[in-house]
Image (cartoon, rainbow, N blue to C red; front, side, top):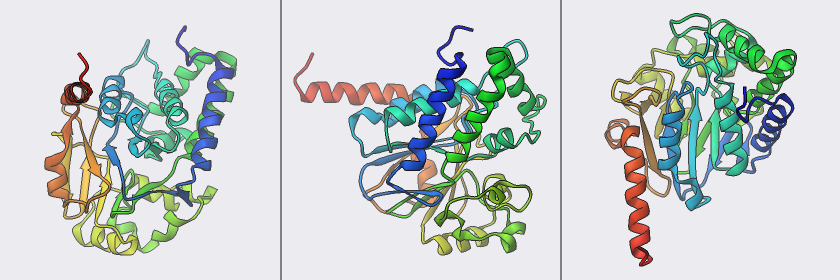
Length: 306
């Protein structure tokens, strides 16, 4: 392997520096990153090792234009693009870590269930075999005897990921929400404190419930919105045929890994829209590069260039 994420020592150093940057983010309090009422936030859904969609997301986010531009990344690993039958999506972890360091405080990789499963060694499948085992096989193939060391660095990076991003204007982004039947065991205050080992454990760890929950109901979502003081919750962890779906009032689900994947660009200075309005505002990632180029052309014209 000759790619830049094939050197064990360099890869581990990258991940450890990025993990430290996530923990040291001055906008972070407890398990949550808090964003002020200015700039924009590109909210994405599950990525699952789709480098083309990541390129489109970054074109849409245009992080270089301002430090008040932010992007959510989630569910980075375990795609269906295998090489010789193994999963090399550790490279997507590397790309995310590199972005965290190149754009301090702007790139927010959220804790998601596939990263948690990989860190814990819990078998998980998207229908094509045990993704955790195939990921481990990929580490063995690329890093050989150093695979264990790399896996530990990946685990430290995962443990450094925030559980949520919350905006001053009332948007909360998490990978998912607890299932309705788990609510009697769930403490919404988990977002306000540092996570401990028990929070990641199955089945009743507080972070575990956040990233694995499904089947959300309007009354349950409304109760969480009230507890957190937010108007709109944004999640991944599901399939949306058109890339964005209003699951119920106040809950927007985004899906970014397939050809109709989408992202939503939130204006952090304005009051958030309803979930239905946000779903309609979502931008197909297939169009993101063209939109970014059109915006760049407008800026060049304003400057009187070319």
